[in-house]
Image (cartoon, rainbow, N blue to C red; front, side, top):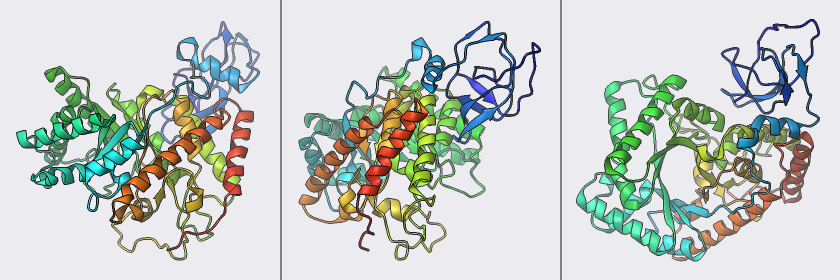
Length: 479
């Protein structure tokens, strides 16, 4: 990895000085990873460089202006040349658009609420529409246990009866031509200070491992902790240590039973302390375990880096102009595409959202309810459902994830009040809407110029997204 220091001092080795892009060693605590480097001859590495980079802590792109001197340097002509030099022959980026097709998946709660809809009909609807992967939510698994006369509140107790039902569910999914991609969500697990509570949390994670074998899946993922009380910390070393230990526990279980490696995924919720892809990736990198990886959720990315449903201006964004909003997001997704290896992303979830009327859609009155939670739980949409009020540039996130070389499922995670309605048609209708949305997303993402390669590509990609968003009707959904 090439890293830049933002406050390095020059250390000249010759009288002549020049400013160039180049790799160097880490020179200060605020690490930056450069998106590019140059081919050099007889390069003397010294702190002090110039170039576009990304802060590893915040994920913020920036232009680093630091000075250095070199013997002989060949300056790149384009950002594409720089990018190629950075990645090297053994780590070339995938072709764009990608030559292969990612399989499609959907969360069980995105097919209908568990209170109104049994799991089997939801799975059958998904299979009929061509999904290949199922994201199993805890609530749906608990309800399935209750359908079989077992207590749902003991969903992770590895009793013979519970495990037998888990095997039955895994076999049902496979008989429909699908697989269970993961179970979720683990919540408020990491960063707990009290050692007794911390151990109890980790034991809850370990209880899932036998069920993962029964479901024939290898991934469980946890959401970044949303607790803000004094009993938890978001300290990087603490969070990374916890992730590492969880990864070690999963690996030890796999070694003991001789089965495939079990994996831990980590997702930054938009209302968590670690609420960005970059802060979650930072913790995953520091954990430094091959079976601990990043979960990218397009909705949560956009809810932090693009959207603001409560903006009184009524456009639903953080920034006042669409152009600035898209620029900021594109810079961030360039950082993701160029710094996160595709095999370190364990799962990609996507969803769009409704443009709501901030005059009517008010923040929650309960101070313990995260401000974004009502919007997230009741107003997500399937990707690019413009006729229903969607307005998020989901294709930018999708393109960035695919550009990493990610080979896993592209899976829907959508919550909406419409999923809570009774009736046999609900799973069928939402399954169909979902597959259409995924197909539209993949087409839109693959059609974007590779904005992570050059400024011209970025300019064209942003113009394409802005044109799409501006061409759709702008009206608040009916509340």
